[in-house]
Amino acid sequence: MTLPDVYSAEPIPAAAQAEVERLLKTGDLFRYTASQDAPVALLESEFSELLGSKYALAVSSCSAALFLSLKALDLPRDAKVLIPGFTFAAVPSSVVHADCVPVLCEVGGNYRIEIADFAARLDDVQAVIISHMRGHTSDMDAIMALCDAKNIPVIEDAAHSVGTTWHGRNIGTIGKIGCFSFQSYKLLNSGEGGILVTDDADLVARAVIMSGAYEHNWQKHKAKPGDNTSDLANAFARWQNKLPLYNLRLSNLSAAIIRPQLAELPRRIRDGRANHDYVADKLNQNAWISVPPKLAPEERAPDSIQFNLQGMSGNQVAAYQQAAQNRGIKVQVFGASQDNARAFWNWQFLGETPNLPQTRKMLMHACDVRLPARLTRPELDVIACTLLDAMDDVMLPTAAE
Ligand SMILES: *Cc1c(COP(=O)(O)O)cnc(C)c1O
Image (cartoon, rainbow, N blue to C red):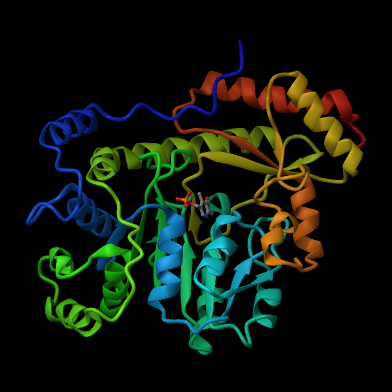
């Protein structure tokens, strides 16, 4: 059997196609044209309902959501923002965009923040962004306890974590603000797009205005039915005309493409998790490969798998990548290419990048393979077998410690 295509997204649901067709006929593509119930506004109320948060603001990308979150927090110029040393380059970029200074902390072999190092760097930090990279959730109990004790706001970069829960609570609703992506490689796909969620009326009002709700367009952002409406109205009145407009809005077309996918989420989460665990069990049989387990409070929603090549030298890691390539699978090792956007030493726009030996070691041994929810068991078998056969090409099966 040939290897499946792991890059294509799922087709956009027929209901979305019909709604896009309707919008194209009316030309009503701007979120603030309609007096109410624009697709973007409906997406916001559906998403906040789904997540269990009070407010949601849909914007042009998760990066825009992260930038607006930092701006909404009203951090002074050059404020230090602590971020993990393992994240996507868009995260330090959003910090730079907000005129703040990223401070990086160590990430361990399980792709999660090293709490001792995180705590040690927290002292002169004014905000924190937790990137749940590839959906791997860092210890949010420890992080929230440390940050709450110092009154440091936590932004969750849940770009790739929709559907993941921590003690049963949705990732993205634990910190002060959570940010999600609708870019095509995430579980909800509109090509581009993002959304932020929060329970804080003042923060959302600031973010709404700065996202481009000019004049009185903020009136089209409502509290949820049954919620106190005056908190939000008062916050908007407070910030009227006081903030710059960065115009990072989402179009009605993108919202129309996302909305019917919300109903697909439970299936994508269930199948993605089952696929991941099925392949992880097979890979963990090999002594050279280790898929780190999830943390106990976490229920994951993966659409890819990460595994560490343990006890292998740099040359052996490269040989494994080549062997997998020869067998038709592209295995990305985060730190092993010149330009990977998830390797912190490639973020040269920061000037000097710090020395994070643990994170570096992880990045040099951590492999990344896409595993979309739509794959079938036979397709997963082919992927797992190929990954294991490639290991047999380069390492002796019995020699691992
Ligand atoms: C995709 C991703 C982003 C960026 O999202 P955009 O919507 O493309 O801006 C940020 N952080 C993480 C962890 C991501 O996976």
